[in-house]
Length: 471
Image 1 (cartoon, rainbow, N blue to C red):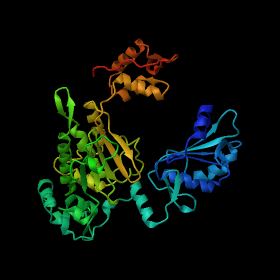
Image 2: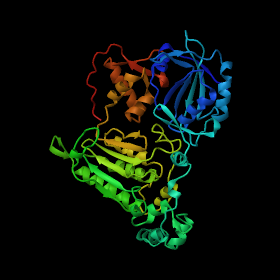
Image 3: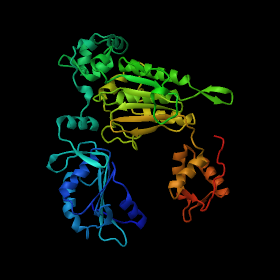
Image 4: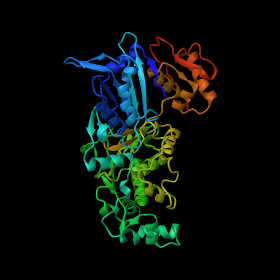
């Protein structure tokens, strides 16, 4: 597959030359050996993906950036040969030459996606990205954690140093067997499901069927519920309404109790409304699905609890571990990957399972928030955890959402607007566009028509009129 050459404008060049190096972006000189550059590509692929630009110098004490690209495509052959051997052109890696008028040579842009498997640099060493730095993965413990992060192995299959009877004679498994598999004996069924191996229970078996999994797996499977009487970005001790609640037990019961406790705490929050003090409303489906996802998809190798923090204006659900395999914050609603496959599969066999629609939990949560007129949840991946924020903020009107989009994009078309405005019908969106056109706020982009019609902001609009509409 040939590598394309793209002409970029000076404004795009300036973005590359001025952007700070970070977790997703790096620049390198032509003078760096191709083998050494594989360390950078490996680190991005094993973390969250990003972009690497080769052919940019940093000179002087202030590291002023200068464009100094390859003389031609053939001059990059040594780099491309090394890269292709380790990171072949395709879905995970794309290579593009960039040309800019007035600048010498071609910059090689390497676009790197988060990969499902571990990518190793030359000499067989994998790297990970930490901010703007690359870090070697050399110890067996660090490599094992990377395998957990990638979903290549799962902590749920590890054996627990407890007798098999901790789950084979427990109340949860007996109740489950009577209601779900009445013809089987508990221990034989648990062995068949590989929840007991070599006369010891697995982590998944303990989480699913031990009466007190927290005793066997301390600090790895509890849930803490907090109530902070504040809207501040972070909770603090003085704002705590009560000592944090601890929710324990096997995962089926734990999910139910955590959801119920969270809803109970929320219902005690009041805000001033037209009829006086009113209870703040969140969709229970969103709370249920997000807590369920936190429990069944967290990384149980990380010694920490799930933290549910209820603020005056939002709920935060933070679960240990990063997103596994190729899943990212951007594609999480479309991609599927079960870090804890046994937990997901067996939990779905329980009566009225909490993960009834396997793989659709977050989509259900997003839809429930939109139905209640609230902004969709915000998902933030931190260094060792995943944070989901359920915000008590109303959705913007469709008109306002369009204008917000046009603040950072040159134009918008009907299909794009329907997506960001949560409007399903084409004709409804046309009517919204028409109202904005009639008020002189937006205009059609010349040369676009029918299904490709695009709209842009009318230049020199000093202020925005009220765009509030009944919804």
